[in-house]
Image 1 (cartoon, rainbow, N blue to C red):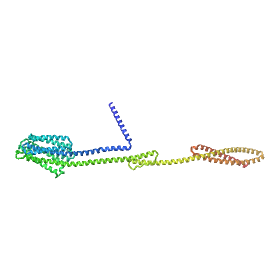
Image 2 (image 1 turned 180 degrees about the horizontal axis):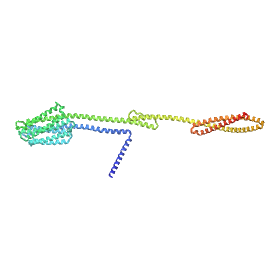
Image 3 (image 1 turned 30 degrees about the horizontal axis):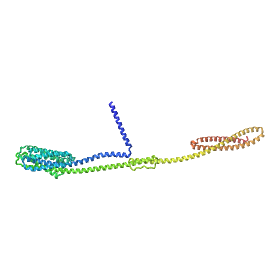
Image 4 (image 1 turned 60 degrees about the vertical axis):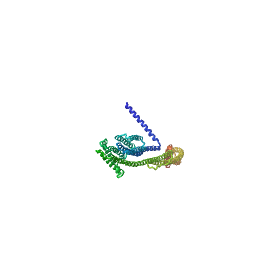
Length: 578
């Protein structure tokens, strides 16, 4: 049951889909040709606009990302400066808190510079429009102010100061990573820029942090002259992390390829000096860690040397920032040109497509409309219109074929017209011939009537002749009998015979006339039959009459010949004296 219901539902859906498809097909089929072209153009425009918009949107997005990365360079560089100054303040604070009062003035100067650095970071972040980052900076600033207050009031021991400074610097490093991440620098699509960014804003700052902690702890140890302090063990553990970060920074610089491109340039020189400085810094740290007596080492010299090592690392970061700024600016300019070029190409292509669609629509609709007008005129009987198309496409071929067909149709109509005129002329001639035939038939009928009248007279004459011949025959028999009885009567018979001979000759002449009349009647009957045959159905009855007249004429001629033969025989007998 459920299966049947599902089948019915499926069939219903299929029927509904067919109806919808049929409605759409009917709607499209009923659209004017121009509207169909407009519909096709709109569909093509949408099909072209979708990928074009995606391409342009992608290009604009890339441009926006690059500009955001450029905006992230300034706050990132400001954060590097803040980290560097905070690290220096940590070392100076460790020296002061360890008992080196000579570093107090320098520490206070660094404290003021750190305050300015925080203001610089906030100013640089104004272009990024990130409230969360500014909130983190404000939080760091408050913690920094509390730390600076404690250091200024000597309310902290050296380890606590180093710890709080380190925690603050670690938070600053995390904030630097947030700035790099929010600006998009951390996800830069260019491999060289990516490795340079990683080296400048991750590996080198972490390396400088290890060096900075080493500077602070080493300075505190040298001020206290206590190699067995807890800072000594911490310095030993810092060496491994320092070396690891140095290797990471070196690998990132090699992967970026910037050192090869900038051979003997500022970045290569700075990186070379930084590498040498790293080696010196490691030696300084190892010397403190391995020394049993620190009395011979100067804390100020150590602080100065380690500061130069750290500054060498920051110098590399600054050169990388310059390189990144130049590279990103070039990429921004190139991407902007690409966006403009893409937009111009899209506009040109859309304009060309629209223009081509308009031209094709106008040409096609104009040709088709012309063909429709000519076809409508032809349907109304106007064959004066012509149909021609210059284009060589299928529509042009169709129009030219219709034009050729229309030309042939005109020729056929002209031929039919000529044939109709010929038929009309022939009909007129036939009608005239029928009139002539009718007149001649009437004449023939009159002649036949006369002939019939003559035939009646001739029949009466023939009857008289026959009676006369019978009488003559009887008289001849009587004369022969009388001749036997009386010679006297014979003379009279001879005289009568002479008269009979003359009458016979006269009858023979009459028979000749009758024979001629029969011949002429036969000829007239033949002509009448011919004319009746020409007249067709209308002369069929007349043909029957003519045939009967001809038959009668033939019988009359035959009878006349027989009478002639009899009279000739009688005349011969009379001449011979019988």
